[in-house]
Image (cartoon, rainbow, N blue to C red; front, side, top):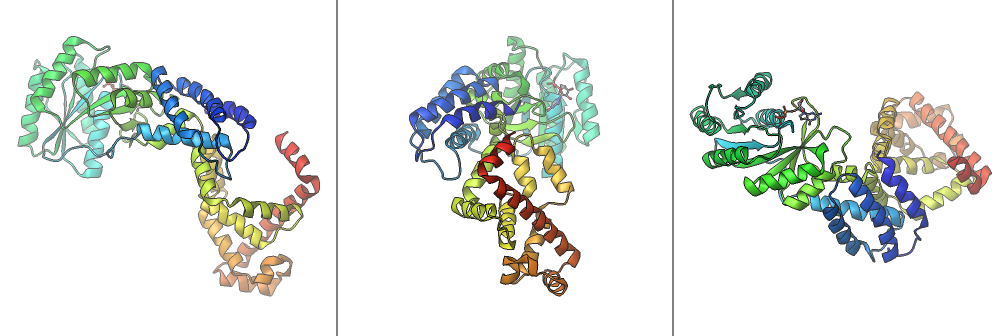
Length: 445
Ligand code: GDP
């Protein structure tokens, strides 16, 4: 699923010419595909249209960075614009809870994850911020709802307001407010009744509750998988109640999260948290970067491009390539490669940024190719003399001992490094013999 846009774009990008700057035609061609991807990710049509227009203006005429293709450059621009749109002015995870007891009103449709999220946030406030939290369910329509919150509370060690049968939501809210003040609570959270659809009477009820407690935060909880519906719900709640932010649940699922962009664009309200599972700690502060990558369906390839821009000095790499193709691959070259790997966040970091390679990153880690190992290898090379680096064949037993000791390691560690170097230079030699053309063909077959 995540390959969709990459695949489509790679076709387009092959056709894009590499010039000094992005031409209007290049940008238009690429953005057509981006638009389809946005719609596929559940971004609403008017929002997608508006967004593409904005990016079109920004991208045209931008100079193309040396080490990336025009296509990658467009993706980066699109990505940055997405992040820009998604990011609110303030820290999304910072809830306004000074002046205790601070009321937080939780609203949303039934089944969206409101009660679960109430518990998650209460636990977060308790564990991370050391706050004393009281939770109260105002759902008098579904008898099990109040019990559900009480059970959650017991599970996470957060107090819940004692249940009094037959009370109206507004009265429960008043009681919660009183109890919170008397009991010295920092925060009290009101879990309002869920509803299947927007419903006038219930909406009025939430409004009444809001007027009674004057919440510091009114968080709308919506199912991130519902796409367009979520946007309508957000607009409705914001118009009638006024929300201070959105929590997107079920972002652990397959949804592409386009609703986040639409909701942000339509209501102007920030996404504050994302729910990532049923467990009580499966909640995270909203990170625009991640959702942007997800909406584009390109893993974090954008981050990879970004890092490449920063770190790869094209000429240096090319020179090295030429030398290697001729069969020259000494310790200096190896060190340069290892340095490069470290800069890109190690093998693990590089792989985790490539779509579909997340699992392999774990394997690389298990195989012991993490940052520490790379750093130790570099230390060994640094312990060699200039001559030894240029000609590793010089390394006999006494030299090996000296080098290993100089790097604070064993000779066996050095032997491993030398073996890796031998294997790599064998591969280089083979590639050199095959010639560039054949090599590419083989790599692609
Ligand atoms: P409410 O009616 O809005 O209060 O919804 P609930 O809190 O009762 O949640 C409905 C269902 O969705 C429950 O089975 C929750 O465990 C589940 N749920 C809530 N948030 C998430 C989430 O972020 N990810 C997943 N996978 N499930 C969730």
